[in-house]
Amino acid sequence: MRVTLLGTGDTTGTPTVGCECDTCETARERDIERTRFSVHVENDRTGESLLVDFSPDFRYQFLRESVPLPDAAIVSHIHFDHLDGLGNVFRVFDSLDVYAADETDPATGESVAETVAGDYDYLDAVTVQPTTPLESTRICGFDVTLVPVDHPPLVCYGLAIEDPETGAKLSLSGDTSYAIPQASREVLADPDLLLADAIVPAELCDAHPIGGRHEDGEGVARTFGTKHMTREGALALADDLGAEQTRLVHVAHFYPAEDAFAEPLALDGETYEL
Ligand SMILES: [Zn+2]
Ligand SMILES: [Zn+2]
Ligand SMILES: [Zn+2]
Image (tube, rainbow, N blue to C red; front, side):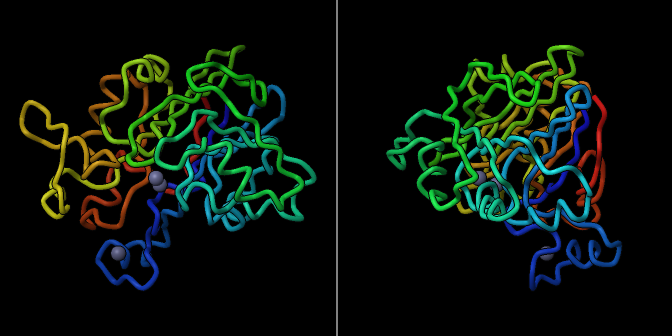
């Protein structure tokens, strides 16, 4: 399994358009970036590729990394930064299966699969495959399981992607607070590589209108507001899951410049062989 981090940023990316903060300026000087979230997973046994989430930066990411176009894709949730790149399929793909959860979201009255199918019904190439969370589905030769996470007010899903032949395992937290349900944690456990949402360091919770949540024993917030993990929360999750290796993703430009490019925060273009 070959994993390429196409996009490791939050919804505005780093550098953020029009922003002159030290973090964005440092990224420009060093010519490094975090585009909107997406991960490419190649199966070297079958030659197939699976895409996780359709970043608005889809076209640029595929040109920059020179990875093969996907044979199938998964949408974790319906926020702009994970879904709106799907329009790039037009005139590029003849056909593409897009997997998304089949549970009705009380906030929208639709499942992720139904919203994707409705919003992109003009794309003849796309076939939406409604997928039941917590059940394994074979996609591109991998066993893939969507797991409910906690990203209010919308439903959102993390993922476990396992190669049934080699045992290699990639887990993704999805966009989530630290309050990932136990049944989901069991599916995500013991990955070779964990990609965990770590939007800001815990110290920035003071700047959030409702602060932080899910404090640890020392009072450090593991959730920023309600929707995302802090850096400390993501590292605690990695510890809880027994992750062999962890990269922090969905990273915002709000990290101070001295922390923003430190380990284990991911940058676009990193690759991993599992
Ligand atoms: Zn900035
Ligand atoms: Zn989101
Ligand atoms: Zn997001």
